[in-house]
Length: 344
Image (cartoon, rainbow, N blue to C red; front, side, top):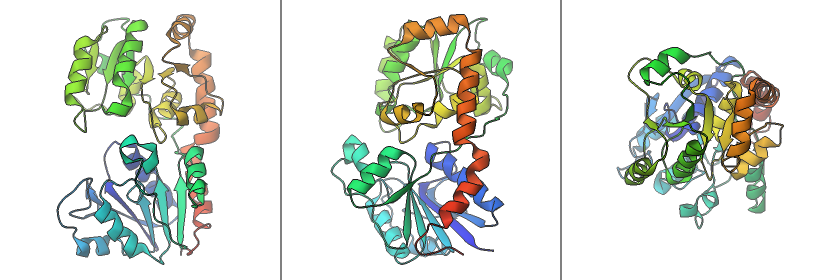
C-alpha cells in the first residue's frame, strides 16, 4: 500500500493548516493510502527536532529522512512561508526529483513581514496547489503554475450542545453571543470585531489564545471594549461544534486570511456571518453566500430582527454545493493524476 507523508512546521492542532491536513489525510486514506504525519511540533507520527516555526535547534536530519521516506510527500505551508528557512531548505533538497505536492495556504508577499521574501521553490516533479484563486494568479505571475483546490467542509456537522455550553459561559437568557473562532493576532482584527459587536449589542467571544506577542494589545482591546467579552472555552468536554451551537452569529475581523475556515463553518453550522471582507472572503462570497460587512451593522441588526432562517439555509446550500468534504476524495484523486513525477 503506498504511503503519503504530510510534512509541516506543526500538525495536529486547531489552526487552519493542521485542520485541512487532517481532512486530506482522511480522504487519501479512503483512497487506499497509508498516511504519515511529520512535523516539528504536535501529536504526529514523526517529530523532527528543528522543524518547528522559528525553531533554533539543529535539524534532526535522520528523523526528517525517516519521515519523508514515502511514495508521495505533501508539504503543508512549510515551503510556502519563510518561518524556518533552514528547515525549508533541507526539506526542499530532499524532495528534488521526487513526486511531491506543495500545498500553499499562504504566500510570503501576502504577509507584510515577509513581503520581500522569495516565493516557494519549485521542481519539475512537484505539483503546486493553492487554496484560493488569488494565490494561483500570484504564483503564475512569478512563473509557477498552481492548481486551485479550495478547503472542504462537512455540510452536516454535529449539532452541538448549545444549552450546555451557554450555561458554562454563564450566558444570560436572550444574550446575543458573537463567536470569533480564531487566535488573537494583529491580522485577526480583534478590535474591529469588538467594535462591531458593541454596535449590535452582542457579547464578543474569542475562542483562541493570543500569539506572536499580541497579549498586551489584546488586554488593551478588552479594557476598552464597549461590550461584554468572553475569552477561550470554559472547562468541560466541549468541541468546536458546541461553540458554533452556543453562538448566535459568527464574527470575523480578519484583514487577511489565506482562506478563513470560520466563514465556511458559519455556513455549515447555519450561523449568520459578520465580517471584514478580506480579499479571499470576497472571492468566496462570489459563490452566492450572503454575508454582512463590519460596516453593515445596521442592516445586520435588521436581518437578525426579521429572522435568519432563509439566509442561513441558503448559505448552507452554497457551502454543500461548492465546498463539500464528501467530494474531497474524488478531487484529490484527480489531483494525484496531475503530479508531474507520478504517484503510485
